[in-house]
Image (tube, rainbow, N blue to C red; front, side, top):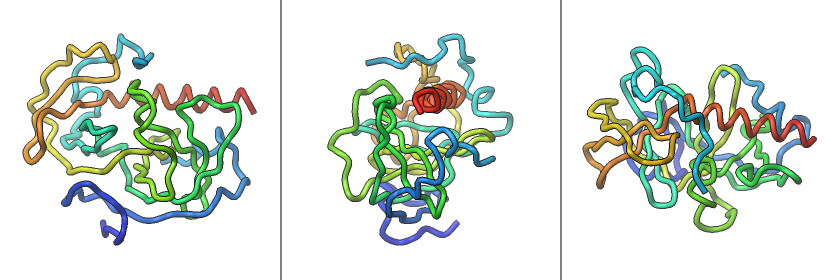
Length: 206
């Protein structure tokens, strides 16, 4: 995919396209409706499978790395669609602190979440800014933008070391070539479950 110029990536060779987006949300869609596209510590389900390949999906061999609050994480490339630069966010009252608001992605109102908060790391470093790196995540039932520090590279899903971290959302750690230190691998099933709960919570408060 072609990378648009001007969007921060935090690394080259990701194979994931980037774009820029701005302007406030149109207001035609609610926070809960915006997931309609087909495409402290975490409270994630601790009984989730611990095997990386079974959680990522059969045949899913690559992980997309990214940085949150200076720490490196990795997530299945099946969920990560693109990186965009968000320049305007519409605040939504009375929602979970992990939800930063709504932004306009090429005419589609989409919720913006703070990935640091979702991962149980507290808030992202720094306030909402005019230019934010946002990773677009899509599943069959959910579409959401996640605020991160920067996007990294795509690395092979191999050499996973089982996690002893109390954060149940982490499958384990791997040492990826070209990065400093270990990369924490996120359980995509737990992440999607957390995002679905945020969506449901926002729907109930409307």
